[in-house]
Image (cartoon, rainbow, N blue to C red):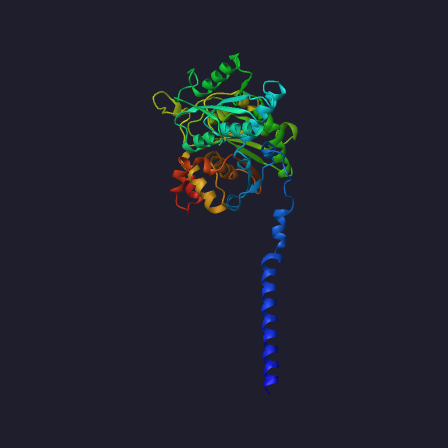
Length: 399
Ligand SMILES: Cc1ncc(COP(=O)(O)O)c(C=O)c1O
């Protein structure tokens, strides 16, 4: 009798452990293997090992902005330039300026040579990081009220930071002029064998050329050649003119509508649409501290630079975006798409939804996402943080 009880007990133990093991195996299968194609998507084509940080520049991803594509009749995509190693499209420019100077014998790899630039923005950070990667030193002149994030980044990267009083471009101590002067001083110094270049991103044509040779072709390839509109802001003009020139003049996309998204206070809107470089915020007695009176950083200008001028004819239209619209859009993209972007990207996204109203259904719009929100925490994102997460596109456009 007790023998048969034991047999029953052993059998039920065996059955219980079989059930438990099968259940565990099934849940593991469900969790990790049944949907393995999902994980394989990530692993499909992992990038190859790169021989140095400079080799990580470019080949940035393209992402569909799902919220904007669902809410408009167009497909809206963002070229994620914020994925470059120093965090913005300016990595391409900084690298090409340095490589061009090396080709011209102005910088020598292995020598303790210097790159000088006057910038309150991303270009200084890109220059500082690439100089470190290639064995050069960097010297960045900037206005003394530049945001604390950018200052800390430059100092953390070991750049020599020269803070000057905010001034107009005609002032010899303005930060761009200060950078040029510091470079000339080094090159005239006969006691050192170091030499230097003034990067001069506004006038240096290595800027638009790198967008013509890399950003433009990447966008064309990622979109399989189907691009109905391209939208970028304009600081130096290198990105918009370089990409537009490639798409229109090399690939023959003459119907691709190229749009310059312009912040309040900048003169490009009137220049592109009416041929006059002027903004009413600039009129006598109304102008405040900054050259372009906006919270947006990196774009907007009231002078014509060489990088803008050489390719201006490929820009079809400019769309004006207010600071308020950009701040709300930044919050919208963050809470609806998980896209945490900087102020110039938010401007481009607002221009995209304005343009989408005028384009045929299913048109494909590409915008540049130049940098991340983390560069703008203390100023632009301080305002965007305060926006309600239920913000709608209607609230953004104010209609
Ligand atoms: C954040 C940001 N977005 C956009 C731009 C504009 O790019 P570009 O100088 O090519 O016109 C800049 C330029 O500095 C920038 O810093």
